[in-house]
Amino acid sequence: MKNILITYFIILALGFASMLTHNHYLANIAGFISAVGFMIIFFKDRPDPSTLSEAEIKQAAKMRTYWYIVFATGLVFSLIFGSFWNSEMGNMAS
Image 1: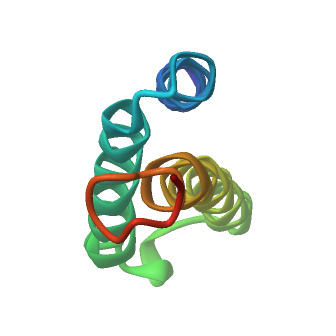
Image 2: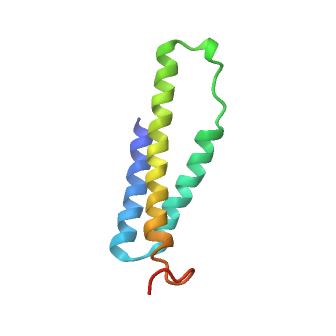
């Protein structure tokens, strides 16, 4: 849980810093962290369910859901404050 909170804080800090400073690179860094995190969590080898108890299976699923929420937040920040406000590539804002 500690790792989830630290990662979430970093992503939120990058997103809010990007919003306040209008520096789209910070939001793109948050998006990059999120994209890599999604790949790590999604493709991570999981232990054989027959070796785990029911409570361990539920706990692992709950933690995976938390990680998905954290990384989805980073992608949202990246899309809104990185891609859409980027005036150098795509000219979405003037």
